[in-house]
Image (cartoon, rainbow, N blue to C red; front, side):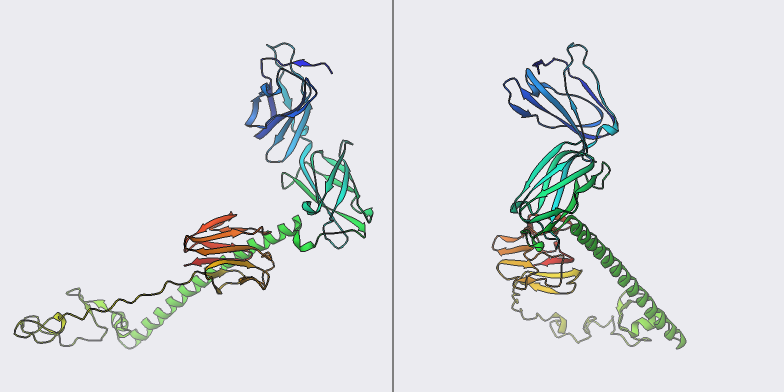
Amino acid sequence: MALCEICACSPLLKVEKKGTYFYWFDYTDGLGGKHVTQPVKFKGDTAKLDTSALGTTFKSAKLFVMNKKTGNLAILDYTPAKDQKQAKEIALKDDAFSYVRNVRLRVIAEDGSPIESALVEITDGEGTPMAAVITPADNGIATFQNVAAGEVNVKVRAKGVTKTVDSDIEVPTKRATPWFEKDVRVKGDVDTIPAETVVSPETKTAKAESTTAGRQASRVDLALQMLAGILLLVIIVAIIYAVAKAKGATAEQALRKLGVQLPDTATGTPQAGTVGTGPTPSSTDASVCPFCGQKRDALGNCACSLQPSVATPQTTAAAAPRLVGLTGTYAGQVFTLGPGTKLIGREPECDVALVNDNTTSRRHATITVSADGYTIRDEGSSNGTFVNGVRIQEHKLSPGDEIQIGATRFRFEA
């Protein structure tokens, strides 16, 4: 193909639906080198293409335009206008976005375990062949990019594989996620990775839904408990009022019988909870203290004017850091954390062992207690570690922080 001189003008890109998009170029330079330009983001339905990254000469250029929300792309050949003053408008209909940016095929054996290694070959919706290699580091997942949607043929080549069960799959343009994921089953005696080291997309979704349902149920339970407490208090007050009224006592007298101090209606001074009035110390006798009721001595001192001995302050040892279960599987349980690094996980050997929670990873997270403070770190868990509702990798803890591990929400106390 002949080399093309790039024009000084910039063509206008127009899409059918407004949204957030990215575009970039894939091209060959004048010396035959392959290049990809940096993606450019734009919002709305129009953008002026920046073609300066293509250089002064190029050939075999392709324009990629991706819809951020759907993860679908439009791919077309790009040729600059010969007339520098008349750049052509590039208009893209919605059906032009017929490629899927990321297609992830998880190859599994008959028992559901991910395959250890394989060569995965596909033919996409336009008949374009593609291939991807699976190694132990890929957890059984073969990743393909810019795959034409439609019926895709899959062939798995690996030692011991006798048949690709899901040899024909459908890659749709309308999906719940910007990417496409699918399990591809194979038959045969193949080497696999232990299933518990990898969580399939379907399992992740189920666990996430279970965790969300658990949180919602906990909130509902707490609200019902609060409502029940209020109703019980109302019932108790109503019973006390009814009993007092039946005995001819007022509500004020009933409350005073229970030991509640109420202000005197005349002076505003709190009175002891007694029915009727009793003798009070004379406020006109200067020899009697109006506070303690004792006689003053010659110097005017009484019992309440004597200086108490100074008590020696008690030193309370700082409470050890701990996790208090608020909601979920371990609600109400307390785990004390000593100094150093404490491992939290499903394994019984963990310092904080959550063996009854299947949504917790075997080695989920660690909390380090040191002179510098408290730090929590996620140890590559499947469902993540959250502090105050935000997923973290490493976070400095403060007393009162709420930590979500698996299906249990803890409060950190120190």
